[in-house]
Image (cartoon, rainbow, N blue to C red; front, side, top):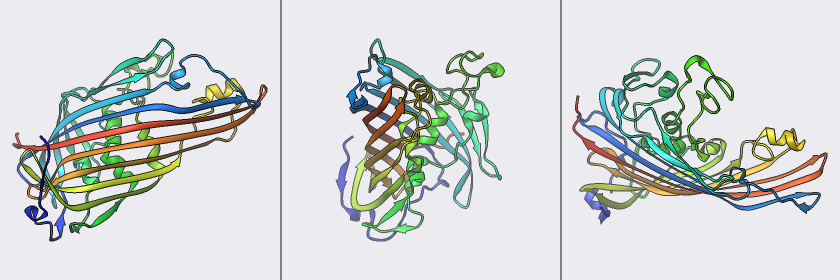
Length: 352
C-alpha cells in the first residue's frame, strides 16, 4: 500500500515525543527483513615494471566480475517479562530464514542458496540475570549460533534516548547503525553449525568450508568492514507523517556517511597469492567510503516501529606496489557495492 501523506498535527508532533518501543503492551511484534547487495569492479589495472599485465580466468571476480546476495528472514517476538519497561524475557519464533548468492567463476556465474538452521526455530531469550541465556525450545541450534541474541528490536538502536521535537536531529554511532542493519544478527542466522566430531578445515572431517564453526554461510557481508570507520550518522524527526496499512506514522529521516581503511587481505585477495608472487609483508593502501539514506516510520500511538527502508553505496579502492623477483608490480582496483534494506514490523495478539 502506498504511504499517504498526513499533516503533522494528526500525530501531535508539535510537542516533545518519546521515541521508545513499549514492551509492556499485551501484543506480539513480527519483524520481516529483506536485504540485497550487488558488487562490481569498476576499474582494474595491474602492471609489472610499468607494463600492463593480463590475467586470465574468473578469479572470483578479480577481473571485474560481479556478485550479488539476497537475504530474508522473519520472526515474531512475544515478551514474557519486563523490568523498568525493558524486556527481560522474550519468546522468539522464527519463520523462514534463507537467501541466495551469485558469484562469477571460470565457467560462468554460479548461484548458491543460503540456508539457516534458524528456519522455524523457537527460542526463549532470558536477559534477567548477569548473562543472557538462550533456551532452544524447537530446532537444532548450538550455543555459538544463539550467542548474542537480544531481547530488544534492532531498530531501537536508531531511536533517541529522551524526548525529541519535530525538526530535531540526533547523532548515532557506527555501532548503532550496523546493529540496526542486522549485521550481528545475520552473522548468527547464517552461521555454520559446529561439525560433528570436531573436524575442521580442508581435509578434516568437516571437509572444505564445513569445519568453520565461526564461519558465515555466503561469505558474510561487506558491511563488516565499516565497523572501525569514521562515522557521521544522523537521524531527524521530521514534521511529515505517513500512513501505512492504516497506521499513522511519524517520519524519521536517516543519513549515514562513513570512511576508513579496509582490512588487509593481501595483494591478490589472500596471503597465499602474496606468497606466490613473493610479495608478502609489503605495505598496502586500501580505503573505502559509503553513504546510506532512508527513513524510519514510527507509530507514536502504538509506540513501535512500523517500517524501515535504507539504500546505500559502498566504494572501495586498493592501490598496491610491490617488489618481487619478477620486478615491481603495481595494482589499482575500484569496486562499487549497492545495498538495500527493508524492514517491516507488525503488531498482533500476544499468543502463549
